[in-house]
Image (tube, rainbow, N blue to C red; front, side):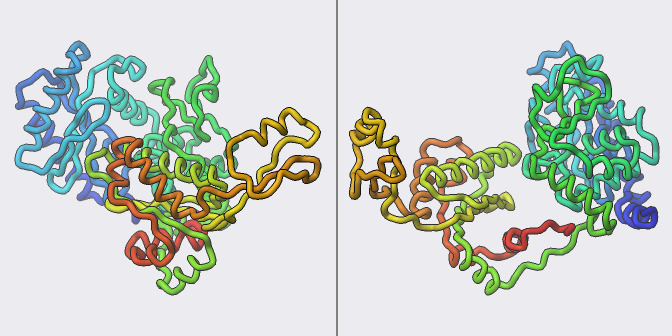
Length: 451
């Protein structure tokens, strides 16, 4: 195991010249901030690069521009943006949004974020959500030793290898801070993997005693109470699918440790003929749409997942069985995928009414306005009629639902569905290239990259 860990760490630990370059850039930005006149105090370097837990090639620098807590929120925003724009003078940058706007861009090959933040006494006394972050940094720098920092890198790469790492809503996984808290809680990589393999359906991690039960207010499968602010669950974005994947990957790793858990394996997309053959034996439909550029990526992923579930519910209400649903996007195109029990239902359906002996309810049942083409008759003690189905095609139901959603849904979904189309098997095949081809192959193989 130690040989394996050393081999992985050799690949993922940042090189000396990377560490020197990032430190030099932070110092240059600090010096620049000192020369800018304004109501700010100083810059704080936060995030995994500041704590020495980041991975090789991770060139993100999270810099917090600190202001007195008495400064009005409007001035925090205007001053923060003004100073950040001066820092990025001559460089490529863009506005981004958290609780308030901040600036992110590229300087000397590093992805730099300049985030305005208040100086407060503790994370619990935050005036904006970002005010906690400097306390996260301070807490971990004080509590973690060098071995745990290296083990944090191992755990991040392990989760990255099984596609269960990241703070964004696209992945619904565990953020870097959460990974480091796991390491702090369980003390080592080995202990963390062993604990992960035995996690229950609801796992709670506390760093100090709470006078309340966190399971009454947080409903994710893993609850990590933030030691800096006990009103926050650090694992709030983690989905049940990702949680279960983490548990099963940990069990498999303990049984047969391998480098593939850290780096996965290359997915070789099936040839089109094989995909077509697979599509022919399944009842499969897709909705092709566009990923809106006007909506923040994180907000859009939440809307896409809600729309996926809503569409599946619509199909089920029309009596189709949704065996499996899936979502893929490269943030250019979007595909909603539905595998059904059938693409076409019988034209006639049986409707079971009340027991034949319940004359009052039988009367009400038969008085409902609908076309009866057979019955009423008694079957197994109940009244039965047969009526025509309004719609028997799953494809047409999807098309009708899309048209309704174009008018009634959120702005993001409206934009997404503007030029959308329902695709059958041969039409799906026309889009079978690149990462979508890899995704579809993985869907049909039905196994993870580490299996």
